[in-house]
Length: 358
Image (cartoon, one colour):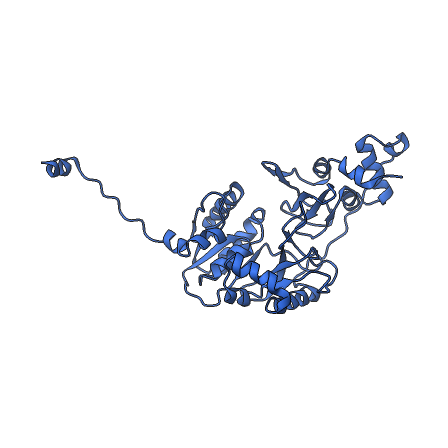
């Protein structure tokens, strides 16, 4: 009998994803992202990441489509066949399979067309509405404390953007395909009119090695890549701030400025630039991505695309290792200070200096 956990621990999932992904992985240091291995998912940007679960087994997840699993699931998604076929392939890779199993190829799979959703599923909207109510009740207190007391977000901004609390699947029933990893802050992505288009869950206590963020299955909603975050009281009509993630954008909205949350630095592309420029409607776009190599690269890429589109923009470089939530938590006027005109530098001429010294 095959010990699946042992077999999975001996499987190099990164190497398997390298083979199954339609394009080479995007690597930065020790981390990597792959294009989706599902032939029916038109994934234009790397959406798959890896993590290790509590049992020490490597797992993968497509953050755009919402699916994932172990190396077994990767083979089933990419090539079809049966679990027995996948196990035989992994045994072969691990060097423990009999010759008959090694010689049996996995069947190829014809890509199945995937329906592109234009509106989120009713189950997703029901989940957002339920979590929105829970945030303001005792069952949501843990999430409320995290958002307001730990992250410093303004309650008015949370209410204006329909932020919610998920107490976990044992308390709140939900449809299949929605986040179910435990207590989480529920962060809807809104359009310019304030309508929910998508949602992300930010787990408060993710399992060891598990991602902090979770997305719904692709069949419930298409990932819009950005979400508008609206201030409860607008104090700046000349700027729009683009941030890396909903929590940063909510921090900005709490200061009275409209913000856009990019739902992942790897999502920055011409489509995002087009949507940002259209929504900015002539206002200057302030790009405030995280102070790390990935964030800085994303900010520079988006700045170049916005400039090409004729959209006025400015990069606000954050200190190393910081995000907007951290910076504004230390200095609430940080953005305003970046926009102050630089005082002119006066240089004392040699003649004037000599005259002064007489």
